[in-house]
Image (cartoon, rainbow, N blue to C red; front, side, top):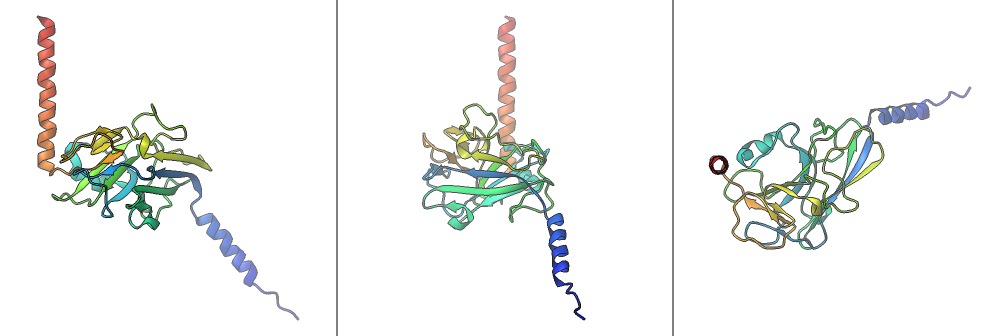
Length: 239
């Protein structure tokens, strides 16, 4: 009597369970810069192979120039591009590119992401460019985002985490749409930071990372200046 083989049914059951357990893709995000883009460091030199590019979010934490020492602890990496070209960063041709799936459970498909990090709908997405996340004299950063859809490219999407229920959706986050810089600069709009050269035209420029104490003092000085100016304007109005 022929004994039926259990191998095929068992394999089918394992495959079905694997499909049920695997995260389901909600939507795909394409993020990039232009080919032969204008990507500079604080000295006005093209970014080299020491730099990495990450997209991600800070959750409820709000990054400012005055709290740079807290960024790394609150940062959630969604995807990363770095040298060599196979990993998304081509320093010779000066462009970076990445593709990542936003899973239906809110996680990222990227191997560079923490599997436990959840990217909730409408969290603000930032591009963090750095040669080191350590705050040392040689570190340079740019942290930029697309703060408004005004002037965005035709296929560009707002830099916000999409709805996880949007299965099959597709989003393009282009560096050319970035218009807000927390440190460094994007698209000819230079934000806070120390620069030794200031090219007129640039798509992105990194800045020297301030030590936490100096950043706080600069932030406080700027705030004090604004307060004094507001008081002066108020007095002038009353006269």
